[in-house]
Image (cartoon, rainbow, N blue to C red; front, side, top):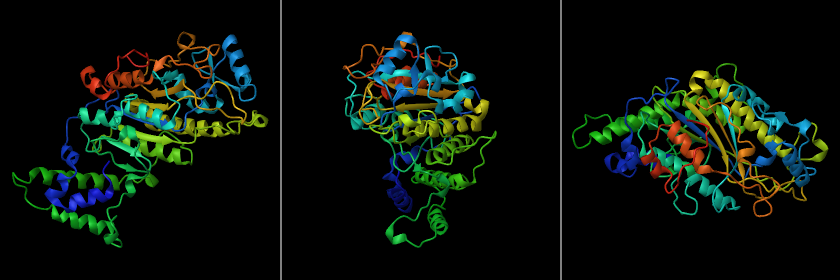
Amino acid sequence: MVQRRTFLKALAGGVAGLSAVPALAGLKHKPLRLGKGGGLKKLVVLFQRGGNDGLNTLIPVSSAEYNHYRSLRPTLGFTSAQLSNVPGSSFFRMHPALDPLLPAMNAGHFSFIHAVAYPGSDRSHFESQSYYETAIPGNGISAGWLNRFLANTTGPGSIRGLHIGNNIPQMASGQVPVPVSTNFGRLTMAVDNELEGVEDEAMRQNIRAMYNFTPTAGNEAVYNTGQRIFDMLDSFSTRDREDYQPENGAQYPDTGLGDRVMHAAQMLKDDDFLGVEVVTIDQGGYDTHAAQINPANLTDGETRHQELLSELAQSMAAFYADMGPVRMQDVMFLVVTEFGRRAYQNDSNGTDHGTGSLAMVMGGGLNGTHIGGDDMWPTLGELHRNHDLGWTTDFRDIYWEIMRNHMGVNDTTLDTIIPGHTFNSVGIIT
């Protein structure tokens, strides 16, 4: 990530300054790599921080499994009547908070992948999040898998990756600079103490004047990089989130996540200059050890988990409508979490750290609505480690399939992005 302080000093420092930020020299125009919808292939990755309870998000309702579920969760578990139907599945029903996503499901543009984990799964937030974000469990490598994608592929954009939030996640960190903001239209340049009180536009124009020279063979790279960066900032300046008007009647929730997902749609629509291919977003709050659900409120669903899933579903549904059917042919929206919750409810109307989790994918290029059914279900009748839902899908297989079959990455490059992994098809994209 390029911090604004580093960025300003690099620009003001000319040749020497820009050499301190080597990845900036790679900003070039390249031919567009078009997808099915006529635009650039794109990926949004949303991380549910804390460990989402997949077992109360997508619930098995076949007689034997549902009986196990209710015995494990006598007050935390849903009655069948409280759940919503999942198009194309008789094995599962879903949390009613996901109902806003039914248009995507009915169109065949939404998939659930249940029982997701990795060999030797860890119940530590820190360890498991790191494994999911580097895609190298136990290896200790710090660069994120999405940053390795940016580092090992080429694209047309001046800025190919963004994180919409306050702090860059590990999955986007690495050798390629990834800008970070909750509103890229409000980026400022005057960030050092000695520059307090300096108007941003004046600072921008003064530094731009430093680059207003005729380039020579010795300084052409620095000149071109400086001009491209200023063009990028100018482009950002017209993309204030507060000025954005969603299309197709899309209505984002008036929440932090709603704002971030809306800004993702705004930035992803700009193929002409920005060419953003990867956006990362976080949603926190899923560590539901207590008060996950109040048994007295089962009917109206006013629960902590309900609120999180409702915010997520409303945000994703608005994104789906806003992007429209043509753009969604080129977009995948992946939702992952570091682990699931234990199958047993605890004594605080919550759940503790578990193993098998739930991933969700939304996009126009999916093979219809894919629901991993009883053939991929590890059964609640025989728990992993005596406490957890087991797992049948390695999370890296989901990453691999999206990278290869959606983003168009070849197998050789994928071995660099997700090293040491033998791919098994998930079946969501072919």
